[in-house]
Length: 142
Image 1 (cartoon, one colour):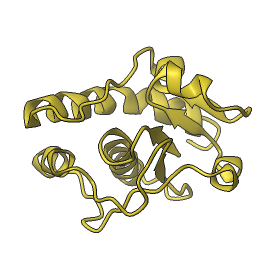
Image 2 (cartoon, helix red, strand yellow):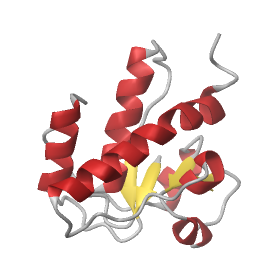
Image 3 (cartoon, one colour):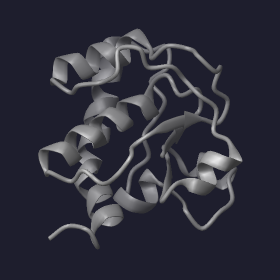
């Protein structure tokens, strides 16, 4: 479960990126989702997030809709991966971590930025995927 603020920019891109990476590695036993700490339920993915994903050739759900992080969903997740340390510190639970904790970098919020900012955000997420997969899936990879 990837978590950001509104679940329209970073976490949907991370969700799509991890799904794509897992599929390419033929790892099929994980469900990848995203949510927001302050998500407006039902809001669409940001236009620039969709553009960045399309340009990178990463498939995503064109009908994606934001959802808030609930205690139930958080509790059911193997891992809740926050984009920033500040977001991580607002949550409790043994399964809560962050991009910084796993991959050594935070993923800044591109909200309101140009498509170039979203491309850079997606690239930062993609750069972290090998470490995310290694950390979360290490006991499952042959």
